[in-house]
Length: 68
Image (cartoon, rainbow, N blue to C red):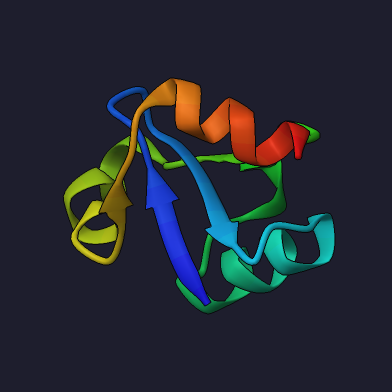
């Protein structure tokens, strides 16, 4: 699974699905409270740690992936 983030702390994964989002969160030890129906937010206190495991994409790319 590949993790993707943008500069606004939105976090998704590829392949994209809600089930995969929850699997990703479990792998990264992110609580469900950070889930926002189509993506997770990266907890502020763990930004550097989690972003180091992600590929950066634009916010437009995040939206495009979610909608496809």
